[in-house]
Image (tube, rainbow, N blue to C red; front, side, top):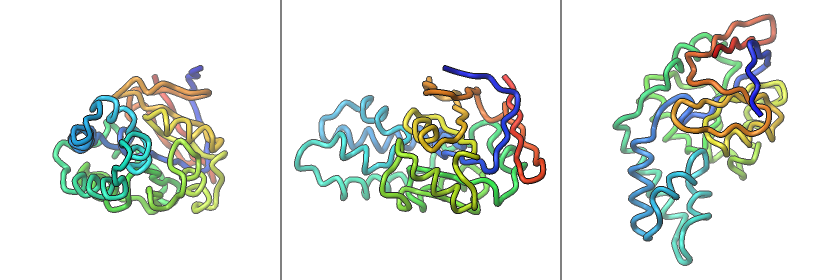
Length: 220
């Protein structure tokens, strides 16, 4: 079920990174297709399953018996770190981030910290004061742990937050955390789960501060 809302009030804003703030499809696809071909896996399936999930979780789910997924995950992340060709911001991302109080928003990503910072820089986006990355949680998306941790570190609660996501695993994680979820559908079908608001990209969002709350204005 989708709801179109004009206003969302929150205490904190939690952004996914890949597919939400920036477009990293080109280097991500190159890395995962190379890994899939090494094991004779379906590249389309691998890329689809990797959306919004930690590298290690994707490989544990798909790698054949006997594969050294720890070594493979490390090698793939190194490959991605060295490949920033084609990374650009999602339309409206930079403008939105610059209107938010720096201490009231965070990035919650399935990428590791070094890769996340490298990609944000490549896209010309500001580094967040608070970044929750793959290393910070035991359970990755679709578990809600990352969003809950980010909210706590901002002295808030995920239930008082708004999550921006593009991938089903991330949308599920945001809802499980009790947050309101805005699904970014610019790059994919981004199937909404539960009570989500869906927008084409971040140009549809305006943010204003009202006391201790952030008001997000959502346009069609």
